[in-house]
Image (cartoon, rainbow, N blue to C red; front, side):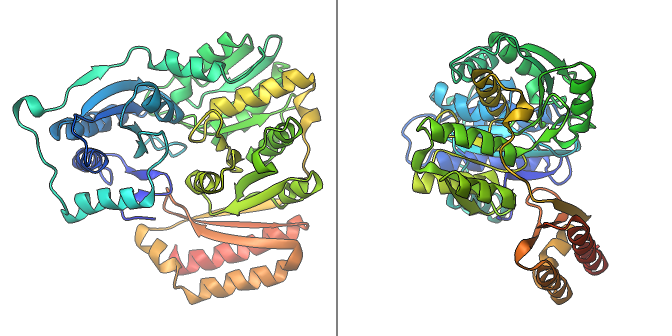
Length: 448
């Protein structure tokens, strides 16, 4: 991770860690770096999620962009993948999304997309960091008529929804679906999307007030959707996070279907139809053991990367794979998108369900190994100390030895929050639970 950019853009508590001044300078640096060599005025698209601080930070970023001569197309509230798609649709040179995804409302973030709709590579992020943090390079402020202009794009939601709708060959007519918008970006798109596809969508948590994004709702609190689906006798439920780049599901019984299970269902269908390039799926080191076994049993190859959808996508681009994702619900259908897209994932899965004429519970294919997780909150300084702490290293190695070949331990600092995450996996739930607690206790004692 860089000094500003984590695994998913710049992120921090709005108006303190992520200030207006920092946002403005990131806008200036992004425009300067990404327009290098251009002989014309660069164009950026800028979108936001529903956080109370998003307008403030979008205004700051926009001011920074305009101050160095970039024009800005304002998309207002849209999902993150809408920004990635609309960069190309509107022939812009880059895109910026103001969002902290699944994080609490006091956080916010800045995600930057290149002109081809992909998140920036490390080299470009490092150039932006050097300008913002070290003063390397000249922002090149534009006086007079050189200042950039802004305009509001009224059709952003309509254009994005139409793109999603066109990705499925059949309607969802007859399906009764629960849809949890997390009081986030999907609040402006989900109802239109499911109506266009003919589904009977029962929308919940689509009344954002600036502070209720992700609060006891969405993909991070899917238990509410599970109860809603059961109580209303619906066929399935889909839940998004704050910026709608993740999707988790529940079947008609209210059982959760995570990203690994969604990938298993969709990957096998793609493979059977000859549409899974190189019969390979890309996941991460946190992908369930059972997914790898499922791939082996169905003549598919599984490739694991570091945690983060950007690393999944880098592997996909490097080796020309077209499908991958994360257990958290970041699923990338590269035929239709350049980043994880929760609503795209939902309609691809529901379209498959309709085409096969099966209940979602009947489509579960992989056997999951039990996993347990612990999140230990620490300071930013302690995150750095984690890498050199001998006692923590000893505890992790002891845990790995205890679980042996039938289990594993993964301990990592979060890329977006002040947390150390511990995950243990194996056949014996009581054993992996104990090992996770033992490691978490050592981390808390050393760094908490």
